[in-house]
Image (cartoon, rainbow, N blue to C red):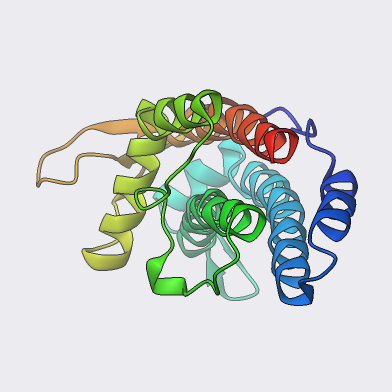
Length: 206
């Protein structure tokens, strides 16, 4: 999994302070959102590192016969918690963008229940095209479906195949298992560069 670091958080904060100097609330909102993005990016690397530690082949084989625990906690509980935390954290990180956009481009007070990708009204044509493409990305849609199902339906099933983990991404009652490690990398490496590109363009064109 590539460590994504193509967006200058500090420069973005400085931009907000200069351009929103008469609006302390907006500066604080943008600062908080940018800090959250930086932290969540670190959390993703941590979750991925932890998953690799606890899902070594010998551990997965022993888990299949119920022989492995750590501090009294089953290995299955551990890797399920890490996987779901990764997906949830990434989804919430991406969903922070509308707050940043409105913090920069709107003078109205922002209400949480009125903020979403779908409700954004973007004036810049180039930025609008980037956002439309991002929302239409297969990985973005799958991540969104995954988390909606996890929150409002049930936890997606994770299968220990002995040498790797797979998760069911069919949320309509069927079965469509994907290698979890490959899926995490695809989500991370496929979505974050595009996401940071949108952030960069947002500050550049505002």
